[in-house]
Length: 292
Image (cartoon, rainbow, N blue to C red):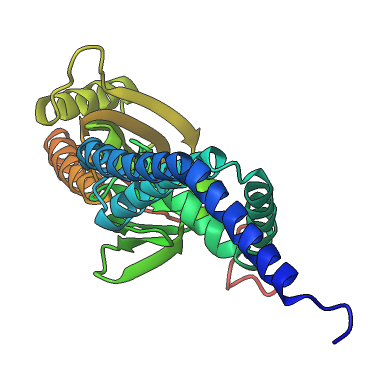
Protein backbone atom coordinates (compact mmCIF):
# COMPACT_ATOMS: atom_id res chain seq x y z
CA UNK A 1 0.00 0.00 0.00
CA UNK A 2 1.35 3.36 -1.04
CA UNK A 3 2.59 5.51 1.85
CA UNK A 4 2.50 2.66 4.36
CA UNK A 5 5.83 1.97 6.08
CA UNK A 6 6.03 -1.21 8.14
CA UNK A 7 9.24 -0.18 9.82
CA UNK A 8 7.73 3.08 11.06
CA UNK A 9 4.70 1.20 12.42
CA UNK A 10 6.84 -1.33 14.25
CA UNK A 11 9.01 1.46 15.57
CA UNK A 12 5.90 3.27 16.85
CA UNK A 13 4.62 0.15 18.58
CA UNK A 14 7.94 -0.42 20.27
CA UNK A 15 8.09 3.20 21.36
CA UNK A 16 4.58 2.91 22.88
CA UNK A 17 5.48 -0.33 24.66
CA UNK A 18 8.69 1.30 25.87
CA UNK A 19 6.77 4.24 27.27
CA UNK A 20 4.38 1.87 29.04
CA UNK A 21 7.29 -0.11 30.43
CA UNK A 22 8.97 3.07 31.65
CA UNK A 23 5.72 4.21 33.25
CA UNK A 24 5.28 0.81 34.87
CA UNK A 25 8.84 0.85 36.21
CA UNK A 26 8.44 4.40 37.50
CA UNK A 27 5.08 3.59 39.04
CA UNK A 28 6.14 0.26 40.51
CA UNK A 29 7.24 1.76 43.86
CA UNK A 30 3.89 3.56 44.20
CA UNK A 31 2.03 0.37 43.27
CA UNK A 32 3.94 -1.67 45.84
CA UNK A 33 3.38 1.05 48.43
CA UNK A 34 -0.35 1.17 47.60
CA UNK A 35 -0.64 -2.63 48.02
CA UNK A 36 1.24 -2.47 51.33
CA UNK A 37 -1.00 0.37 52.58
CA UNK A 38 -4.13 -1.54 51.56
CA UNK A 39 -2.92 -4.70 53.34
CA UNK A 40 -2.08 -2.64 56.44
CA UNK A 41 -5.62 -1.24 56.49
CA UNK A 42 -7.04 -4.77 56.19
CA UNK A 43 -4.95 -5.85 59.19
CA UNK A 44 -6.02 -2.72 61.11
CA UNK A 45 -9.67 -3.49 60.31
CA UNK A 46 -9.24 -7.01 61.71
CA UNK A 47 -7.79 -5.83 65.03
CA UNK A 48 -10.18 -2.91 65.36
CA UNK A 49 -13.07 -5.32 64.74
CA UNK A 50 -11.80 -7.62 67.48
CA UNK A 51 -11.45 -4.69 69.88
CA UNK A 52 -14.96 -3.45 69.18
CA UNK A 53 -16.29 -7.00 69.53
CA UNK A 54 -15.01 -7.07 73.12
CA UNK A 55 -16.55 -3.65 73.78
CA UNK A 56 -19.90 -4.53 72.18
CA UNK A 57 -20.20 -7.77 74.18
CA UNK A 58 -20.68 -5.62 77.28
CA UNK A 59 -23.29 -3.30 75.77
CA UNK A 60 -24.99 -5.30 72.97
CA UNK A 61 -26.57 -8.62 73.92
CA UNK A 62 -27.97 -9.37 70.48
CA UNK A 63 -25.44 -11.33 68.40
CA UNK A 64 -26.83 -10.29 64.99
CA UNK A 65 -26.57 -6.58 65.75
CA UNK A 66 -23.11 -6.97 67.26
CA UNK A 67 -21.77 -8.80 64.20
CA UNK A 68 -23.43 -6.32 61.85
CA UNK A 69 -21.87 -3.36 63.66
CA UNK A 70 -18.42 -4.98 63.52
CA UNK A 71 -18.75 -5.69 59.80
CA UNK A 72 -19.73 -2.08 59.12
CA UNK A 73 -16.69 -0.80 61.06
CA UNK A 74 -14.37 -3.15 59.18
CA UNK A 75 -15.85 -2.17 55.81
CA UNK A 76 -15.37 1.54 56.55
CA UNK A 77 -11.71 1.03 57.50
CA UNK A 78 -11.00 -1.10 54.41
CA UNK A 79 -12.77 1.44 52.19
CA UNK A 80 -10.59 4.21 53.60
CA UNK A 81 -7.51 2.09 52.85
CA UNK A 82 -8.75 1.52 49.29
CA UNK A 83 -9.07 5.26 48.70
CA UNK A 84 -5.60 5.86 50.14
CA UNK A 85 -4.18 3.24 47.77
CA UNK A 86 -5.84 4.89 44.76
CA UNK A 87 -4.41 8.22 45.86
CA UNK A 88 -0.87 6.78 45.99
CA UNK A 89 -1.34 5.51 42.42
CA UNK A 90 -2.34 9.02 41.31
CA UNK A 91 -5.69 7.69 40.07
CA UNK A 92 -7.56 10.83 41.05
CA UNK A 93 -9.90 10.59 38.06
CA UNK A 94 -10.76 6.98 38.88
CA UNK A 95 -11.26 7.92 42.54
CA UNK A 96 -13.66 10.73 41.59
CA UNK A 97 -15.60 8.42 39.30
CA UNK A 98 -15.89 5.77 42.00
CA UNK A 99 -17.11 8.29 44.56
CA UNK A 100 -19.66 9.67 42.09
CA UNK A 101 -20.94 6.22 41.17
CA UNK A 102 -21.08 5.20 44.84
CA UNK A 103 -23.15 8.29 45.61
CA UNK A 104 -25.67 7.53 42.87
CA UNK A 105 -25.91 3.84 43.79
CA UNK A 106 -26.22 4.68 47.48
CA UNK A 107 -29.03 7.14 46.77
CA UNK A 108 -30.91 4.59 44.67
CA UNK A 109 -30.52 1.88 47.30
CA UNK A 110 -31.55 4.28 50.05
CA UNK A 111 -34.75 5.22 48.23
CA UNK A 112 -35.60 1.60 47.42
CA UNK A 113 -34.96 0.33 50.93
CA UNK A 114 -36.11 3.32 52.92
CA UNK A 115 -38.33 1.37 55.32
CA UNK A 116 -35.85 -1.47 55.76
CA UNK A 117 -32.92 0.88 56.37
CA UNK A 118 -35.02 2.83 58.87
CA UNK A 119 -35.64 -0.34 60.85
CA UNK A 120 -31.97 -1.34 60.54
CA UNK A 121 -30.64 1.95 61.88
CA UNK A 122 -33.33 1.92 64.56
CA UNK A 123 -32.13 -1.55 65.57
CA UNK A 124 -28.57 -0.26 65.90
CA UNK A 125 -29.84 2.63 68.04
CA UNK A 126 -31.87 0.28 70.26
CA UNK A 127 -28.86 -1.97 70.77
CA UNK A 128 -26.96 0.88 72.42
CA UNK A 129 -29.85 2.21 74.52
CA UNK A 130 -29.47 1.19 78.17
CA UNK A 131 -33.18 1.90 78.66
CA UNK A 132 -34.20 -1.21 76.73
CA UNK A 133 -32.46 -4.59 76.90
CA UNK A 134 -33.28 -8.25 76.34
CA UNK A 135 -35.25 -9.58 79.30
CA UNK A 136 -36.83 -6.23 80.18
CA UNK A 137 -40.58 -6.02 80.68
CA UNK A 138 -41.96 -3.17 78.56
CA UNK A 139 -45.24 -1.63 77.45
CA UNK A 140 -45.21 -0.13 73.95
CA UNK A 141 -47.48 0.26 70.94
CA UNK A 142 -50.38 -1.24 72.90
CA UNK A 143 -48.48 -4.42 73.87
CA UNK A 144 -46.80 -5.52 77.10
CA UNK A 145 -44.33 -8.30 77.69
CA UNK A 146 -40.74 -9.43 78.12
CA UNK A 147 -38.24 -8.66 75.34
CA UNK A 148 -36.81 -11.92 74.01
CA UNK A 149 -34.93 -10.65 70.94
CA UNK A 150 -33.63 -7.45 69.37
CA UNK A 151 -32.44 -7.78 65.78
CA UNK A 152 -31.82 -5.45 62.85
CA UNK A 153 -35.50 -5.38 61.81
CA UNK A 154 -37.66 -5.74 64.90
CA UNK A 155 -37.92 -6.62 68.55
CA UNK A 156 -39.81 -9.68 69.81
CA UNK A 157 -41.97 -9.38 72.92
CA UNK A 158 -43.33 -12.37 74.82
CA UNK A 159 -46.65 -11.41 76.41
CA UNK A 160 -48.02 -12.77 79.68
CA UNK A 161 -50.39 -15.06 77.71
CA UNK A 162 -47.27 -16.74 76.20
CA UNK A 163 -47.84 -15.27 72.73
CA UNK A 164 -45.13 -13.40 70.85
CA UNK A 165 -45.49 -9.95 69.31
CA UNK A 166 -43.07 -8.70 66.64
CA UNK A 167 -42.74 -4.90 66.50
CA UNK A 168 -40.60 -3.06 63.88
CA UNK A 169 -37.65 -1.22 65.41
CA UNK A 170 -38.75 2.14 64.00
CA UNK A 171 -42.01 1.85 65.96
CA UNK A 172 -40.06 1.46 69.20
CA UNK A 173 -37.79 4.42 68.44
CA UNK A 174 -40.62 6.72 67.33
CA UNK A 175 -43.20 5.75 69.97
CA UNK A 176 -42.94 6.09 73.77
CA UNK A 177 -42.41 2.92 75.77
CA UNK A 178 -42.60 2.07 79.46
CA UNK A 179 -39.88 -0.16 80.89
CA UNK A 180 -40.69 -1.81 84.24
CA UNK A 181 -37.27 -3.42 84.56
CA UNK A 182 -35.17 -0.26 84.59
CA UNK A 183 -36.18 0.60 88.18
CA UNK A 184 -36.09 -2.01 90.98
CA UNK A 185 -38.96 -0.41 92.92
CA UNK A 186 -42.18 1.28 91.87
CA UNK A 187 -45.41 2.60 93.34
CA UNK A 188 -48.47 0.36 93.44
CA UNK A 189 -52.00 1.81 93.57
CA UNK A 190 -54.97 0.43 95.50
CA UNK A 191 -58.46 1.87 94.94
CA UNK A 192 -61.23 1.19 97.44
CA UNK A 193 -64.23 2.73 99.17
CA UNK A 194 -65.73 2.66 102.67
CA UNK A 195 -69.24 3.28 103.95
CA UNK A 196 -70.47 6.76 104.74
CA UNK A 197 -70.80 5.90 108.44
CA UNK A 198 -67.12 4.95 108.71
CA UNK A 199 -64.59 6.89 110.80
CA UNK A 200 -62.53 8.25 107.94
CA UNK A 201 -59.47 9.11 110.01
CA UNK A 202 -59.42 5.64 111.58
CA UNK A 203 -59.78 4.04 108.14
CA UNK A 204 -56.88 6.10 106.85
CA UNK A 205 -54.57 5.28 109.78
CA UNK A 206 -55.46 1.57 109.71
CA UNK A 207 -54.89 1.27 105.96
CA UNK A 208 -51.50 2.98 106.17
CA UNK A 209 -50.48 0.76 109.10
CA UNK A 210 -51.46 -2.45 107.25
CA UNK A 211 -49.56 -1.46 104.11
CA UNK A 212 -46.45 -0.42 106.05
CA UNK A 213 -46.41 -3.75 107.90
CA UNK A 214 -46.59 -5.89 104.76
CA UNK A 215 -44.67 -3.59 102.39
CA UNK A 216 -41.77 -1.99 104.33
CA UNK A 217 -40.87 1.39 102.89
CA UNK A 218 -37.23 2.41 102.38
CA UNK A 219 -35.46 5.73 102.71
CA UNK A 220 -37.76 8.55 101.69
CA UNK A 221 -40.51 6.17 100.58
CA UNK A 222 -43.86 6.32 102.34
CA UNK A 223 -47.39 5.01 102.10
CA UNK A 224 -49.77 7.67 100.78
CA UNK A 225 -53.52 7.66 101.41
CA UNK A 226 -55.94 10.14 99.82
CA UNK A 227 -59.73 10.28 99.77
CA UNK A 228 -60.88 11.09 96.25
CA UNK A 229 -64.64 11.45 96.04
CA UNK A 230 -68.09 10.92 97.48
CA UNK A 231 -69.29 7.95 95.48
CA UNK A 232 -72.80 6.64 95.00
CA UNK A 233 -72.50 4.17 97.87
CA UNK A 234 -69.07 4.86 99.41
CA UNK A 235 -66.35 7.41 100.05
CA UNK A 236 -63.59 6.35 97.69
CA UNK A 237 -59.85 6.58 98.24
CA UNK A 238 -56.54 5.66 96.65
CA UNK A 239 -53.57 4.27 98.56
CA UNK A 240 -50.06 4.27 97.08
CA UNK A 241 -47.07 2.33 98.39
CA UNK A 242 -43.61 1.31 97.19
CA UNK A 243 -42.51 -2.28 96.56
CA UNK A 244 -40.13 -4.31 94.38
CA UNK A 245 -41.43 -4.25 90.79
CA UNK A 246 -39.58 -5.31 87.64
CA UNK A 247 -42.55 -6.55 85.61
CA UNK A 248 -46.31 -6.20 85.46
CA UNK A 249 -46.85 -9.49 87.36
CA UNK A 250 -45.11 -8.01 90.41
CA UNK A 251 -47.74 -5.26 90.49
CA UNK A 252 -50.57 -7.80 90.37
CA UNK A 253 -48.99 -9.83 93.19
CA UNK A 254 -48.56 -6.72 95.36
CA UNK A 255 -52.13 -5.57 94.72
CA UNK A 256 -53.47 -9.05 95.53
CA UNK A 257 -51.60 -9.19 98.84
CA UNK A 258 -52.57 -5.63 99.78
CA UNK A 259 -56.28 -6.23 99.08
CA UNK A 260 -56.32 -9.41 101.17
CA UNK A 261 -54.61 -7.78 104.15
CA UNK A 262 -56.74 -4.62 104.00
CA UNK A 263 -59.92 -6.71 103.88
CA UNK A 264 -58.81 -8.71 106.94
CA UNK A 265 -58.07 -5.53 108.87
CA UNK A 266 -61.41 -3.95 107.89
CA UNK A 267 -63.34 -7.07 108.93
CA UNK A 268 -61.62 -7.08 112.31
CA UNK A 269 -62.60 -3.45 112.92
CA UNK A 270 -66.08 -3.74 111.45
CA UNK A 271 -65.36 -1.34 108.59
CA UNK A 272 -67.85 -1.70 105.79
CA UNK A 273 -66.85 -1.81 102.13
CA UNK A 274 -70.27 -1.26 100.56
CA UNK A 275 -71.42 -2.47 97.21
CA UNK A 276 -73.60 -0.20 95.02
CA UNK A 277 -77.15 0.06 96.36
CA UNK A 278 -80.20 2.01 95.27
CA UNK A 279 -82.70 3.46 97.74
CA UNK A 280 -86.26 4.13 96.56
CA UNK A 281 -88.09 6.83 98.51
CA UNK A 282 -91.88 7.12 98.13
CA UNK A 283 -92.74 10.67 99.12
CA UNK A 284 -96.50 10.24 98.59
CA UNK A 285 -98.55 8.15 101.00
CA UNK A 286 -100.75 5.70 99.17
CA UNK A 287 -103.66 3.79 100.64
CA UNK A 288 -105.37 0.89 98.94
CA UNK A 289 -108.50 1.53 100.98
CA UNK A 290 -108.85 5.08 99.70
CA UNK A 291 -111.35 4.90 96.84
CA UNK A 292 -110.44 8.37 95.66
